[in-house]
Image 1: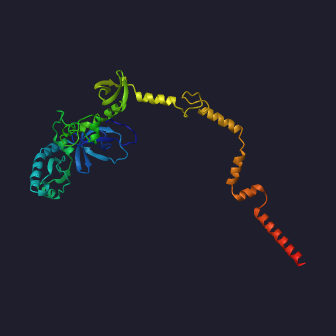
Image 2: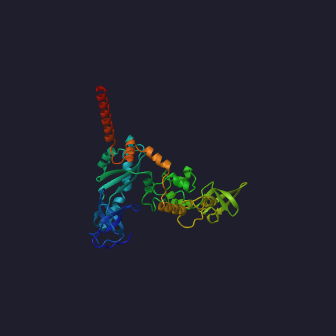
Length: 372
């Protein structure tokens, strides 16, 4: 981390509490004379701890930042060495006390860690299930003057604390430079062509090896540029079928037939399927081109430019509807609308009333004639 100077902003220091551990940000504005490598005293959720400044950076506005209390003195450093020398003895005491408790038979105690002044001691242990350590904590409290804390850790953290050598012959990555563990899946081993034998992909902690994630993205990117298996491609030796991908060599293994196999690089591969699709598309009618000249094989009169021209011409000279279309339109309209269109300005109800009144007058006149 580089030093950042900004007016009106709080600067933070990256502090590490273990040799290979995470960085935590603290505000050092009250101690501007701090430098990289200095030891400081800070207040954490586990009490006061001593850490080492690893660098300076701009703060993260989304996280609360605590103040650095002070710079560590020579006396603090001597106290830290003194209590670190007693951690092995405290661990043995914890193991002896836990041996008398049956419920802690499958628990493995890994380490004991004092803080710099010996006021807090933390025992780290691992187990397959969640363990209740209340009874053990009470018994240990009688033997130690410090405050007792019990913390359960995973198998990868255990391997990080113990150290040792990996399957490659080098010191384990987790105890050398890894400050955080990334999620690892079996998919990463398949993408890199690693044998799925448990002894090949499992680390000393019993989990998938951390190194499987290092080159995973490079393998995925290299395989994306190569043709897939069972795909027909063109090669300098003729048409062949892809049988395997070789991402590290940027090449593929192809089968030419009769048991003949060759390795062909990506530059020598001819994508036959893509060329065939392009040829079919070129000879088939196309309606997705512009108003310009078209060479896609669409016959004249059916191109998009021709369709647009015909629409413009039809809009200038609208066609008259035929007689059959007019009759069909009339049938589709309701009866009242037809009556309105036949005699505009007159209501059909009024016409019916007038006819009825005329009929009544005619019938009354006939009756009078009969009486006379």
